[in-house]
Image 1 (cartoon, rainbow, N blue to C red):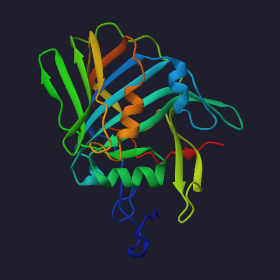
Image 2 (image 1 turned 90 degrees about the vertical axis):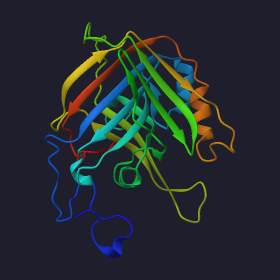
Image 3 (image 1 turned 135 degrees about the vertical axis):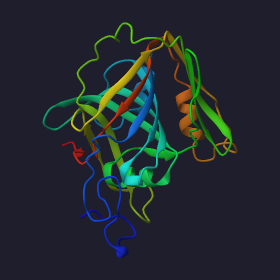
Image 4 (image 1 turned 120 degrees about the vertical axis):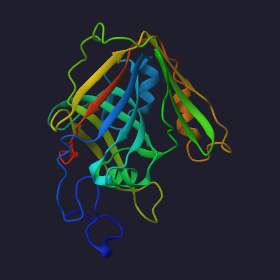
Length: 266
């Protein structure tokens, strides 16, 4: 059984545990609308975000907006996410691990943020993520906090699948760096280690995919008064000089996995 605070009410229902303790198959849920773009970026500028034991694998910055519905563990409800990743290598004790380091994953619902941070080690924070604005051949995804828009991704020239993107380097999944502070001891951790979300598994399948001719990512720098808990993150990302768009797409998918295979890397 899985417990999270407050433990005195018993096991906590969530993505990996239903009210009767059952797991969710994720066979046909969730339904996802995924908007993704990858940009060239200087590896030396990305290196400053690497946690201990990590190094930049390629000079690329990836951003993904995901709009989810029909989620079983939320009784059919949905939520949206906005993630930023960098291809990275973790120098594990046994062997190097190749993957995509999750720098930040914003979500617009508290429940998956809490479970994802505590159980899995995802670097999740809250923001507002309205539905994408779509017109023929175009899509715009936006992120804001308390009315302050801080990011926008625009894809243009959406068409048929066309030419596939260049083959990606081998990836073992999503990499994370979990950090839990110790109560009453600033700067001291209760937990601090690398974590992997293994690639593959589950029932994920693509129902439709369209490629874009180009994409643009715009960050809006903020004063502390505008983003009191996020300005240091947004401004750091805004400082990364982006090169050309390497590939961009919009996909509709179904199925997933409950991420019970998440594990600590030695």
